[in-house]
Length: 388
Image (cartoon, rainbow, N blue to C red; front, top):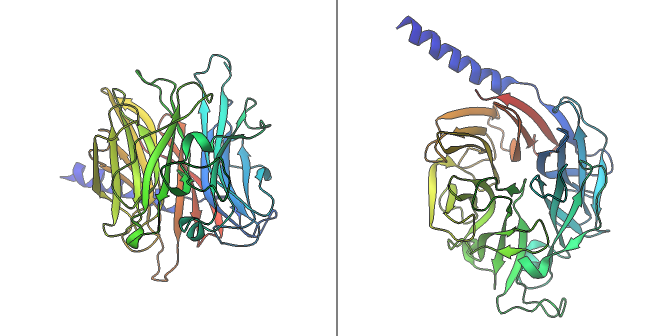
C-alpha cells in the first residue's frame, strides 16, 4: 500500500510539474510589425532546428485583412528564438493557414526539402461562403532548412473545386466549393508502406450556400505521391459540419483525421479513419474521450510499439471554453488515451480564451514540443515536456 501511495504521489507530482513549467514566448502580439499572431505551426528541420510559423496579422485580430505568414527559428530546441522573418506577404490581403512538412524521402533532395502549404484569400470567410470571393492554395519549398524559399506554386486547380467564374474564369467546376482552409498546423509525410513518401495535407471547405449550424462545412485532405509534381483530393468526410483537421499515420497504410465539429452539437472531436492512406474514409465517429469547445486540435506520430503507432494529441479539453490545454498519449492508435498532461489551465473563472490553437513537434525520443496560443491571443508560446 505504501509503494502504491508513493507511486501515485509521483504521478500527480509529475503532472503538476508539467502544469507549472515555464513557457518561452515566441510571437508576442503588438511587436515586430503585427498587432496579433495566430494559427501556430511547427516542424523540426533536417538540421534539427525548430521552425515556428504563424499568421502575423498587421492591423488586429480579424481573420481577414493584411495578414502575413511569418517564421522564427530555434537552434537550441526551443530555449531561444530568432527574430521574425516574413515568408509570404500578400500585400493588403490575407495569407494564412501555414502547413509545413519535411520531405525526407525524395532522392533528388538527399538532405531533405521543406514544403510550406498555405492559403490566400480576397474576402472574409462569411462573404466567401456566400460566393463573394476566393481562397487559393499555394506552396513554397526550402532546401536549406528554411533559410531561403522558392517562388510560390499555385495548386488551387488541383485541390479545390470553386465554381466562381466571376472571380476568375478558370475556376469553374461542377461542384461549388467556397471557403477553403489547410489544417491548421503541420502536414504529414507517411513513412510506412504501401504509401511511403506520400505528403498529406488535411484541409476543409464549405459547399454551396451557407447552411444553418455550419452544415455546409466538410473536412477533406489532399496529397502528393510524387514530391509535389501533382496533387490529388481525398474523399470528403461525409459528416456535415466537419471542419479544421489534423492527420496522423496509422499502421498498415492507415491514416486518421482528427477533426473539429463546427456544428458544436457534440462537444468532442470527430475521428475519420482510412485504410488507404487518406484517400477514402472507412469510419467516421465522435471520440468522447477528446472533449472540445469547437476549436483546433493537433495530432502527431511520436513512435511505434508492437506494430502500432504511438500518437500525441493536444487541444483545449473543455466543452465550453478555450481553456484546459491538454496533451494526451495513445499507444493503440487512438483507441484509448491513458496518459494525460494538463499544460495550461485558467485558474480563475474569468471568461476569456486562456489557450487556443496549438501544434506539436517531436524533439527527442520521449520529448514533445508544444507551440500554442496563450492569454487571449496575446502571445504564442513554446514549451517542451518529457512524456515518458
